[in-house]
Image 1 (cartoon, rainbow, N blue to C red):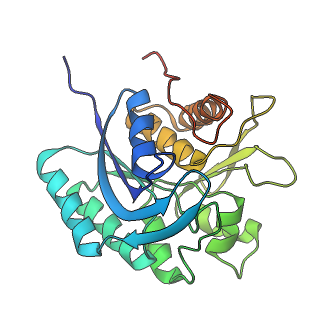
Image 2 (image 1 turned 90 degrees about the vertical axis):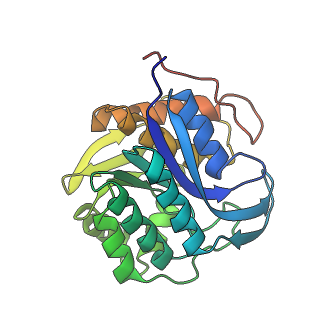
Length: 254
């Protein structure tokens, strides 16, 4: 039997497995990929309560990545929560050294959904360097406003789209809830409205969408279709049950 393609998650560990590494791995498996993982943090949380975050040292993160590249060919990596933009820059640099053509999907998690602030301040110069190396960034409306507090959303999108593709998640929109927007080639190219009439909120839904998008890219699906399929997968995940923890029993036929 042929080995499944490899894909890498660089993210935190969530004991509830609703978000972070274990959520990414489940999403990868549902897309018929083999998920590798590098841990950036150990969190103390469940599906509705966040208590603390213990960060993994940057040197340990880098060693994990370098060791994986000694053994595996990795064409796509999805990055979740990291301690700082400086640490993120080291991670991205290491990935590019391991594979100059690697496609990086960055989910810029600035705080947990319960309000824990991961980045009290940011070095925007380093962030700009990181964005130049990313294939996609997948913020929600709250995160994109926090990335550059001195800019409005329109100015931020204009600035970001000069550096990377953007999948703007619409779950926090007040005007059109659930409407996602995709920016590439510096302008908006795709609107993705919700297809489900209603959804059940889930812990870790942002992680699922980003890892589903990364999965589709790893499977060499075209950019627009990759985004649409990621949205569809996430909606199926949201409506897999009525609890805060979804299941990944929805798969595509290859």
